[in-house]
Amino acid sequence: MVGGGDRRVTLNGIAPIWNDGAVTVFHISGGDARLVSARLTDLVAELIGDGDRGSLFESHDLADTGADDKASVVSTAVMGVQTESLFGDKRVVVLRNIDEATVDQLRSLVDYLATPSDANHLIVTSLGKLAKSTTDALKKAGATVFSTSPPSKKADLHDWFADKFTEAGLKIDAAAIAAVISWLGQDQARLPSLIEVLVSTYGSTKKLTTSDVEPFLGDKGSVLPWDLTDAIDRGDATTALTMMRRMVRSGEYHPLQLMALLHNHYSRLLRLDGPNVANSNEAMVLIGSKSEFQARKYLDTYRRLGSKNVAGAIQLLARADVDLRGGKDLEDELVMEILVARLSRLAGVPATSSKRR
Image (cartoon, rainbow, N blue to C red; front, side):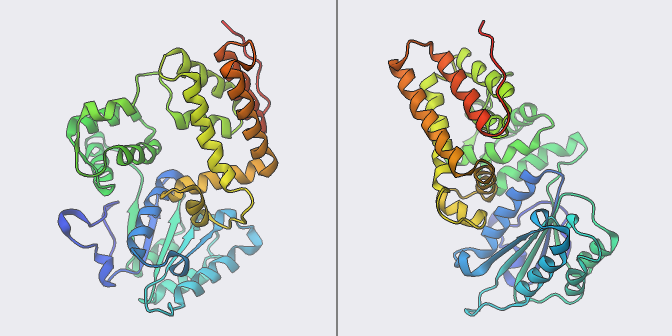
């Protein structure tokens, strides 16, 4: 059975068709890793339910695998989906980024799809085009397909956004959806972060209107918190400094509020320091997040920075906090400029010097 789009069948109290065992293979595709990851997180949570994630979940990523090891990783995933749980529950095995492997490297997967087991669930994801032999095998296996790519026709875009909000358990009116579409423009990959904030703020009972949503969209030219931390994390000091100045000069954020935002960000990274975190599922527990995409993002950032630089960032934050509270005779904005430039440098790109107006 091939689904017609990215729609979870949980509307109006109807149980998903895969809960009765009719579907065991799923394919999540799309051009943006953030949207694919967000959909994957939802599907895994729905399939496992209240089960023990530690014993029922297994994940493999071909994007993180060398060419010589890809065939072996594929075979391991296939073996995993063929292994029945000791407790009778269906296991969920994820094989990410199958578009990163060649036809030969996917041979064991294609062979498995010829006669898929109904004992467990297999989820594969792809960001790029797949070979015809792979797509044919998925189709013959009865895979349910979730496309995370927005529709190309503007007329269909409203329904696509409405589905995303509904999937997250949010109630939202048409005018509010239109406001979100206008704000996001072509950058639909920012939608999962926005939805996460709205769910945390309003829950699932209130029907959201434009006035409820607008405070989280900001005016044209405004900066959202995750835009600033993303720029810092990728070492883009110039962009990070520009964003920080706009946030402060617009009056949207006091420097102490920005300090709190950055402290929360690096405190989460610090929680990953020490434990040998193997994957995003373990990271989700440590940082207290329900989003696999967010956990994976934090884990990637931590691995890139390393223990020494995360500790260094915490020291920089502590020093800047003292300076903001009168430790040095510096303007608040200058304190923040120095902090953001130094944090960006930790990510590997030297900060450009700033010229104060």
